[in-house]
Image 1: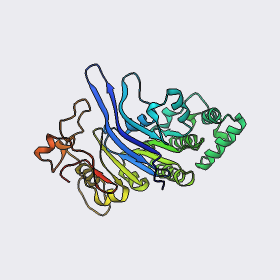
Image 2: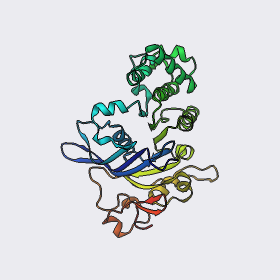
Image 3: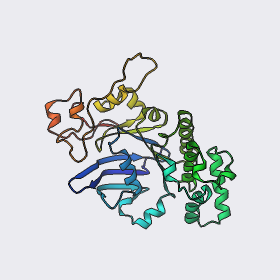
Image 4: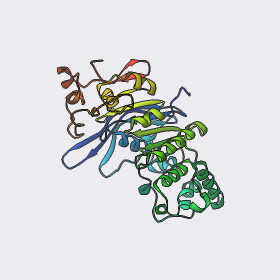
Length: 322
């Protein structure tokens, strides 16, 4: 693995503004992804996972959202210093994104072929015929049946699994260096989920694509991740390699997530659930944001925000009691 990261996010803060409050959706996030590496961001809904990925893509709404601090270094260049025109050149070319529900990501009134070839023609200045051939090759790579015929069909004519495969093929058209996938298997049945994840593994291995995978599913993390970033209330609370996370998670929140996983080797009447709820991002508490749900919290935890600190090489935790 390359020593230099392909993507490095430093101190990222992305806020949204309402009439009465400031929503600190992402509040000081750091992460790194190296070429060919699969990094999973995991956490409950409202933890800031998706906003982090949208920030990297430069897709934060200018109407009520803003990246207020931090750096997003991609391939040695800070994306936050690029214009919208420059970001448009990067999107779909060097950085691609797969969204949670392909039916909303695909244009319902355009044929599959037109949607797949539009970006390729713009970035590579090739003929329509050459672009069509590339699109068919990509559809066949992701095991889409009747690839030539599907080029002339519309999204509503395809199943959810096929639409997601089409999205993956579309993102692969320009051989991106980085693929961001936001809950790419949530809307799919278990069999199709496994096939989509396998396709993404092939992308990482065969096409040297780095993947940032946003998920709440620890089963997906176990199957896919080289490295894991655990987020809670807009912050990273633990980050380490996948094996270490499952064998020796240290943060109380991460431990709670692990305990909530069903096991075929244990007979439980009820699965464990972390008590309480994630604090609202407009009203985060003064100290540790997990303190009011934490089984080991002490008085100091409610008064002082812990820093993310390295416990051992490659393993960092945001907790002063560890």
